[in-house]
Amino acid sequence: MNLTDLGLGPARRALGRREFSARELTLAHLAAIEALNPRLNAFLLVTAEEALAAAEAADAALARGEGGPLAGIPLAIKDIFCTKGVRTTAASRILEPFVPPYESTVTANLRRDGAIFLGKTNLDEFAMGSSTTNSAYGSTENPWKRRQDPAARLVPGGSSGGSAAAVAARLAIGATGTDTGGSIRQPASFCGITGLKPTYGRCSRYGVIAFASSLDHPGPMARSVEDCAILLCSMAGHDSRDSTSVDVPVPDYAAACNKGIRGLRIGVPREYRVDGMPAEIEEMWRSGLAWLEDAGATVHDVSLPHTKYGLPTYYIVAPAEASSNLARYDGVRYGLRVPGEDLIDLYEETRGAGFGAEVKRRILIGTYVLSAGYYDAYYLKAQKIRALILRDFTDAFAEVDALLAPTAPSAAFAEGEKTEDPVTMYLNDVFTVPADLAGVPAISVPAGLDADGLPLGLQVIGRPFGEETMIAVAAQLERAASFTALPALRAGSPAI
Ligand code: GLN
Image (cartoon, rainbow, N blue to C red; front, side):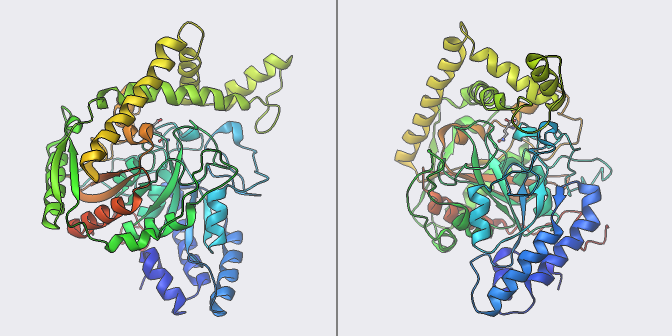
């Protein structure tokens, strides 16, 4: 048996029975990273020594019959979660020398439960993007290949593209991501894995480098709904260091996988039927609805009338908050410093050299929409529309228990295909941004392949703090889809 093929549930059971050690499991993943990461560039930093030390501690705990729910499970951490003493860059030059003196709450929770961190994964700089091509440290390659054109280098989606590629290629059992406008779900869809964005406030943002604070949602990425549910149990919880963290109990999300969906009402948001959507995605959406009906749910048309304003609203609110959050990178307090003739010159030189093109674009848009004279016309208006988008969801959830839609309007594209034009790129977020603007939970599950053999995801959107129902629906989709296809580039594959 190849240890890198195991999902979290099976690995955890086998570790408990001492069929192999945490050290062996960790070594298998480190070997896979060594073999594949030079090509994929999924990890920006591999922390082999720390991982092996943690594995030894996990083995000792397991031998005593102790160890937390994740004892000995090797994970990949998006390089936007601060890890104490371990370099954290947000894939930006401006944070190249940054070694955080503290640990994010989410990673602290995972460590508390025994998880082993293999390293830090690549992302679009400051999580701004949908392709992981906006990283200052090179792009990440999607481990999937087009059947007809295996030479094309496909993007893994973004911004959590390094995490998604690592999990898909079996370099890690699970990973952390953050979703501000789709960055957990869209890369999960592009890489044929599962990604869960919980309700806003469910997972603490403390120690997660801020992009847009009112939209940033940390969450799990893994190879099954159950694995995501297990990870969420550890990641979630109230945190007094994040003022938007919500103090509600953390249920047993994994148990929700077997709840069944008989009698649940599933909504189909009619505004998500956009022009130009590939027929295969339409088809998969219909299949998804049929699978849920077969399992005893009923399907209902619903309307989210403000959907068409989702993208323009997001691309005002997110850059506005980003421009404010990124003001802290001034070359004085931490990170990169490029000397200047005076203080203003130092700021300009540092920020000019430290930020990439997309980040600069967002800062320009953000400061523009927040400036006197434009604030009311853009930012305030966007905030009002955001309230209407939330109301759309509230109204829909008065009638249905969950919504089903595609995760993205396309499969993975090749580098250069959309990456040259920022607006085409922004359009890829059409189905994911509304759930971020409303703060409602959503999960992407691999549901099929397109004609090129590339994975496509379906997304279940739930009520605020309705993760259990959402997980039950997603688990049913997963069973019905029985998605077993594997990417060309993966640990132990004959292709490498
Ligand atoms: N693609 C979106 C953006 O570029 C979402 C990114 C994210 O969720 N972090 O802003």
